[in-house]
Structure formats: C-alpha cells, structure tokens
Length: 294
Image 1 (cartoon, rainbow, N blue to C red):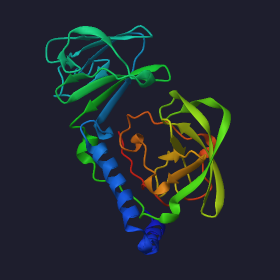
Image 2 (cartoon, rainbow, N blue to C red; image 1 turned 90 degrees about the horizontal axis):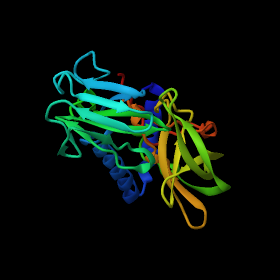
Image 3 (cartoon, rainbow, N blue to C red; image 1 turned 135 degrees about the vertical axis):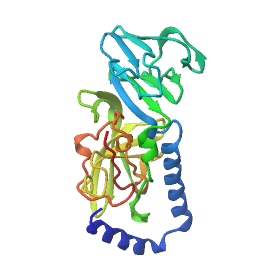
Image 4 (tube, one colour; image 1 turned 90 degrees about the vertical axis):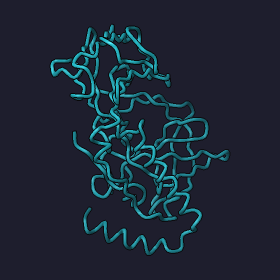
C-alpha cells in the first residue's frame, strides 16, 4: 500500500474517534462474518479450477493428458468423463470412491446451477465438482478444501469505519425493469441480470447515480468502481448490497463494500460494473485490495 493511503488511514482513525460504538461493532461483525465465510469449506478460497465444456466427451482425472486435469495425489489418474450435448451434462465415473450428493455414483445426468437451481455435488476426497451455467456457457467448477489459495490466505483488510460513508439516497425505478447482459472477468462470459432502476446519493460533496441489480424483494446490488480502484482497493470492482425502503429511499453503507470472489481465486466468474457505475470520487471505505495469481 502507498504512503498516501497509509496517511489517509491514520487520519481516518482520528476522525472516527466519535463513532457510535454500537454502529462500529455492527460493521466489524459484518466484516468478520464475510471472512469466516471466505475461509470455510465451501468458501471462495477453495475454488481451485474451472473448465469450460465443449460438446462431446471430456475426460477428468489427475493424468496430465486428461481434458480437465485434477490436482496430483488428490484424485485417481482417470476419475471419469463428462459428456455434453450442448444442453445437458452426463457424468460417468470410473471405479469407486466417487459420490454425487453424498451417494455412491456410477453414471447419470448432473444438475447445473443455472436459474438459481441447486447444483449436484460430485465429490472425491477433498475435491468437489459442480456444473455451472454462466449466460448459457457451461463449465465445471472445482473446489479443493486444501487449495493453495486457502492455505496461503492471511486476512481481509479494511479501511477504518467512517460514519459519513453510511449513505442514504433515493431509488429511481425504471418504468419496466431492464434485462442486462453483464460482462464478467472471464472473456466471453456474459451473465444476464435484472436491473429495476438506479440509485441517486450524495458522497464526498458530489451527487452520484448508479445502476443497481435486483437481489431479493427489498435488497439492491451495487457493483462499482471508483477512483481508489487499482490503488488502495481492488482494481476490477467492489460489491455492496443496500436496502430499498417502502418510501423509495435506499440505504447503502460503503463501510461494508467488499471485494468480489475473483480477488481471492482466479477461477471465479465475477460480474463487472455497468459503465455508469465508475464513481468520480475515491471511496475510501470498505475493503482494501487483495489479489492472488494462478
């Protein structure tokens, strides 16, 4: 981190001396919960591989000649194969030791995670594979409970909590919700999301507008960049959820803005912000940068 941002953080600590202790505690608890989730057996630190399927058969195993190569010593040389017809995926296991949803498995169709469906879990030892659907592109996601990303992780880092970044604003609904094709960090992978409208809020003496995505009945999802991105904060973007109130006001606490999964594993498929969500200020609140290499 640059000397500039160290100075900013020291100044922010002094400015935050008058914070409501209960509010500060609630933000710290939120941050702790995020880190606990990240480090769990199903957290993003366990995501250790991604293979996009093409129609036909893809072999999988620790043999380097496999279509999808698994970590050596953690899976048989030939674990099995995936057959993809352009729509559905069928998995065939070779030998014993493979389970799907906790039950011994030989061959059959595998449910993907598209349209909020619960994906089937293919497990062998510490490895788990799921079929993912990203905008119609089908892939195999690998999780490894002993991945290097989990082993090498230290901690998440945050700006000090500052009350002025807990902002209130207003919701500007579209006449009809828009279907957006949202790019991701993976070239060629585009996701479809629903945007019910925009939010307008004041921050650092300026008025800002940003497009939000729907997340449940009263929750709105903001994906944004700002002028700290690529410096003190993660370059791609940060995520933040806010509340839509009955009077069409919104509440967004930038102290809770956090890094997307792609900051912690190169195998995530994180959505990127709409063009208009590049804020013209440095949002010196929320999570600081963290990035891993493959």
